[in-house]
Each structure stands twice: as C-alpha cells, then as structure tokens.
Image 1: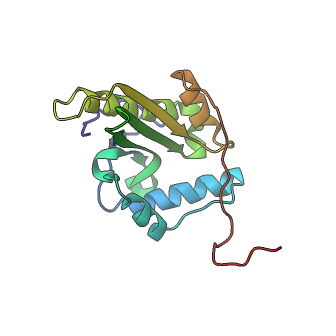
Image 2: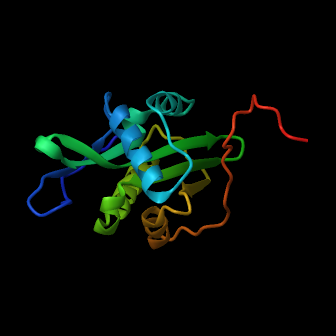
Image 3: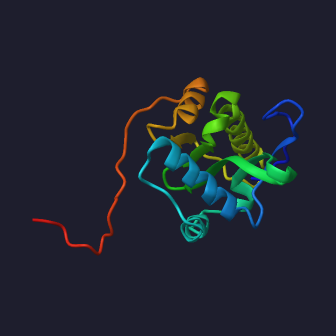
Length: 183
C-alpha cells in the first residue's frame, strides 16, 4: 500500500501542514504524541520508543507503507507530528477474507480541526488503492475494523462519520504477566 498525499489541510492559518507516509526517525515523535494523548485524556496506557519499534516490527507490519503522519510547523519552524494513523491488513485465503485494522490518533489540540477524519480518509484511500492492485489477491469479503479508546472522541466520531459502528470494548493488561495473580 503506497500513496502520496497532497498538503491539503491547515492546522492554523498560514502554517504549512502535511500528511505523509511514515519514515525512519518518526518513532520518537509518535511516542511523544501517544504519551501526550494518554496524559491529556487520563489514559493509563502510555508507550515507549522501544514498544513502538516492537509494535511496528510485528508480522504483517510495514510502517513505511501502512503508517501516515500529520505534521505541522512547531517551535522554531521544526516539523511536529500532531497525528498519525495506521492500517494493517491480513488475508485469510481459506476464508476468502481480507481484514483491515485501522487506528487514528490525533493530538488533543487538533481534535476540533477535523484531522482525525482527514487521516481516516487517507487510510481508506490506501485500502482502496490496495484492493485495486493487480497483485492483491481477490478476497470475497473485505472487512474494516477500527480501534479507538473510549476517551478518543475525535477518532470515534471520524469512524462513525464513514459508517463504522462501535460494537464491543476491550480491556488492557495493566500489570506484567510475570506478576503473581492474587487468589
């Protein structure tokens, strides 16, 4: 899944803003973004650069073509990542099914700017591009599954705006599996 994206949104009037594919070196900024979101929304789950490296290195994960970032000029005109989105696809030949998992994360200061919806639109464009490729095996059924935390209002609204519906909630382990479980 490769795409190029135009600079077509503005974080603030006059400031250049871009949506682009992930590149090596983005991990520290993405980790900082995830932690800012967690701290601002009161979420217990933060991340580290090491965790993101492991996450982006999992099977079926190709961040250079599955992750997009939104950046805008920050302090001293340095680019600052203010949002990122990811799509990972799995093809089950025996079930004749392809599943796309979607995630969108946006800095709390950008939630009202429609950035989550724009990132999601780009992910859906990437999915459609992938489905049109001749080398992509045809699947009789193609499913989209999106993930968002309950406190992530902007992503949830973006998902609902394109027709996705919340159907279940999950739990996150907050302790190490090596710790004993109280009887």
